[in-house]
Image (cartoon, rainbow, N blue to C red; front, side):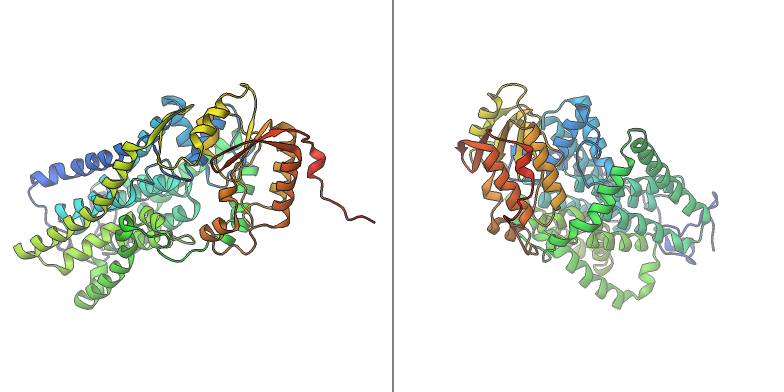
Length: 532
């Protein structure tokens, strides 16, 4: 077993134990593409995000992160004063960013743009290391960007998770010359887990297993120390603010008991022209891997970095579940791009015609989703803009939102507004206090106790209620959550009955109803007892 001068096994990142140094790529003179292609990819990724910096294209989870940041920056404590089941790091990043740069949608989207640009650069770098082909690597990274932006150019935990996951892979791939990067790999993998629990946990395992064949205790120790340092820092922060126990209850206990039961979807659900590449990428990789193993044998997996690439691609695939929707696959597939680039390079040997064919296919792959992205950008440019508390927003789907926002902004300054069942961006756009610990209530997802607690909080504190019946219907729930067996359980029906008894209809604004406080009282939340 060969050791490098710093005492780390040279095989630690590639399942290459027992191979001599000749198996590693010979250092080639740096070309113009080597020097600038990564920067071009990052800049292009940022520019592809620009048309959507102010665009609102439909109901998304972005409000979860921005509303939580608004609450945290106003003095509320995460997990203790309001409910969230995602791990804390994503919330800390967004709240810290908005505290420094302001609570506007533009400021938050700029954070997203920087994350996407950095992720695209890392995707290019990892593809370049495994395949040795800068043009192919750049095209794969840009195809991913073109397939994932537009509707989903927004603040979301999955973007952070993809960035930290690729950072971990890149650090492992480049650690031969700089072994200390294994600590960075562990820290980045831990960060991914502290943003999205199951996806990040898969990345932690992938990184650890990729280091095992090297049998270097020092390499494993560096990786573990990097991950543990961030984990303990975040746990210490939660302990200092007195939210460690509720964080465990919400992130671990509630998520394990309540999250997955209605989440299952078929692979590639809700496809469109833009997301064809992410959907076919994983099956294509499986096919190409079978062909490559048939031609090259299992020695292929002992080449430098291939073990890590396979493991991270597997983590990306498993991370799509239990909701492998087309756009979630787009978030996850970036982890498989290095393996795809390596397989293409192995199966299509060097040669002028081979390189021309790969280049043409790669450019066509970029052009297909890019055409759809340009169409969406045109719609965003023509969309009506609305001035909100979070800045000017271009709304492609209005549904009465402009009129509702203007009405809510005209309310008395200290009136609180409860939004039901799922519109967490409304408090951000209007700057209104949300009087409940929960800003999302979904049947068979929210528990009876959560409905009951929310009812009591609303009856005690809310002056107004915004109700969106269009996303509270059986048809909507069964489209988004086909595994849902009961879209109107008793606790939901009782909660809505209490709302209509305690609040009076003030007006309709598109798909929204605005209810004014009337005879609201906590007694309305008491379960009805059968007459004797």
